[in-house]
Image (cartoon, rainbow, N blue to C red; front, top):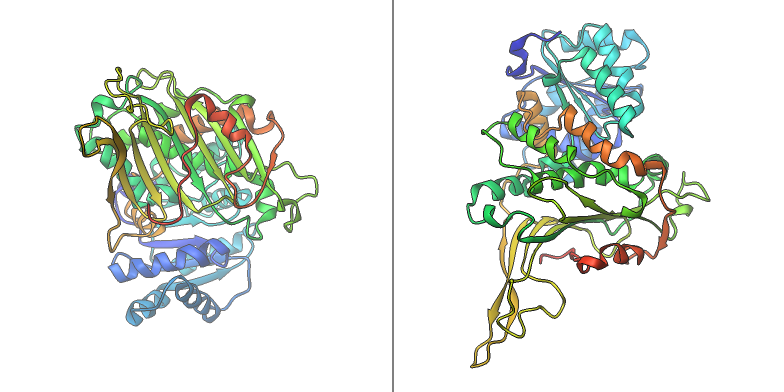
Length: 468
């Protein structure tokens, strides 16, 4: 079992399981390159995979990945990254693979093991790390999804904790590494004007949209096993809900944030079939690896309630989907209208009162919608947005930030066991017991049934791909 020092002592090596996979090629090599450029990565990086690959071939993959992600603008940093790379090829079922890893690690005694592998292999690799002695003083970084329902999440937690102590387990959700998501937490608790109105007395509803204008991109087999509810809503969107709904942490520390976020999940009302609208874009069943009669949802909208003192009775509307009309993510917190209509036009024509809008992607912004009087004698006006574009040069990419934090032992942006299991409790009732998926046209905003879901509280706010 880990010594107490390993919790705060930086890792002295990074082991990447699944180093030849798609995730590593798209996201991890560019993140490692950025970490080297910033001077925060200067330890051996051992790649592990089943492929018979030479070190030169791994170097070629790394260079190709970094080129595709942008440009190679620091040749010394690239050369340094390549000098840190090592490769171990072998079967995860074979203890010889783990012996070869130990050899590749050399003098390193506190490795961080990053599991960028299919979830079906998590338990197998964690157990092998334990039996081979590679878990002592080490950390494990587990890629999402963490389980596919409550029972499997509990079992994975049990296995992980039989090998690693809880504070050496880093459950990664790359969404939490985004600057715009971290800004929600900061914006809420660094500004005093918000707290008096951030409750059921002043907030009418909250909606969160995470939209993509593309399909499953050849990942039909994966999507058949996951679906939108598991892939995006139970993790990414729930994490945003927790940051918006949590109580102020008692102190500045990730333990306090984890505790308050977990409490939000614990008081979420478990979903029922009528709270969920599932959709599937026309053409999904023609994707490779997709069943001809598939009922897997590529779109999901749901109505959620948080039964806490602060949020009792306030509906939260979440939706996400593929092949929608835009690629963007936004939060809209709609406020209740003034208690008395002093001016004839104070009820907005489109039915939307004042609101606060957090734009999360593709750019980061905060907007506050307020009514402003038009020039003239009449007391009539328009609703306008006070808009703050919050893009900042030099922002760390999510995986760069998360891998740096995990190697440093900082668990602030990772998910706790308590929160993972509590979130699964909410969605578990509708994973199998649900209505059939409704077809919808690509480039639309999903099936019309999703509009009916929110109708009692207004309409969906449709974000745009462009800066707005």
